[in-house]
Image (tube, rainbow, N blue to C red; front, side, top):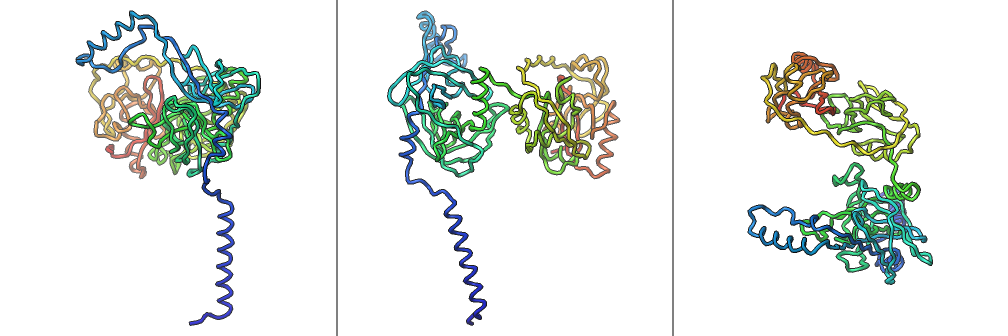
Length: 481
């Protein structure tokens, strides 16, 4: 069948439109590079090798992890004794860094220079300069050094890591295994990685080869801007297997700026302890999807407490920035301007509310108190959701070190096959609320749980206090995983 003239025109119109769209997409997409030689030649002079040394006292030297019954123990003991008699030893290490200002400002990793009593920076032309530490930030593993030169130094610019996409080309330049300037290339494998290095994890993952000695070196985009500081790898052998991590430049910029201005970092603080909003917690609160950061506790007279926030509130946004997961909040708060008053959006009792908080400065955390010795508990009065519960009395307060003024129901047994055990509930935990209602006896807990089951809830939210710390746990009704 031959199509009518009008249909044929429409067909060709569609084809032409598709061709125009395809051409536009091709024009906007950045093609794969033919090579990286021009970039490497331009950027390498600003990338430096960092060598450090420190003196270890004889008592600092040991062979870690050697079993007492090892046949090699006598040999190593004799070897170490000889070393101790020989006096202090100077040890050296190597890393990488890069210059961000022609006056001699160098960025690297904190672990590259930590504990060093001598630091030297070597450029690609062989020039070696002594360096001094301008400041460090162990929490993000960053350090800033200064060197003095009689001429402007080659330098590179910090770029915008926020514009990176998974699949973008990146280049790593550094000093792997002490070999000197080495260039590797790959792509961005993932963004916003949490590798459990600290509270502010937000790493770029790349398959560009990163090895020992690359630490502190730059990760570049194809515009020649630094988008990350290479910091860590995952490898069973110690060599690159294509899983490397870099601190994003969005984190590096404010840290470097604060160190250069104050000689230290100054982070925001609002005085909250938080926990993850699990699907079970979200369902029990009527929140819908699991999002935000749940407030498990507050510092007395801290900014959040003064603003009227309460345990059980879920923070959904801070200063206009969405809080998708728990780990977003510490980073966003830390980056907030100290002394500024910001809007905080919270979810409470089925409503979304806004509160204003004045951001304070984070101080060093105090050391945690030692846990009380474990003692044999009494028999449970009631078993609910796999938990053996009892009313608080003087003996139980003494055994589990429960504060005199705290009221609630104490957990003295946990069924190892229960959902409670899966969620980490332990004997000695004190239940102060069930489904956001205060409880004073095991019967209160049982009654509220039965009420939630009759209401069709799939899970029930418990507010627990252990060792002075508050947390929330959502347990599936029925009590077993």
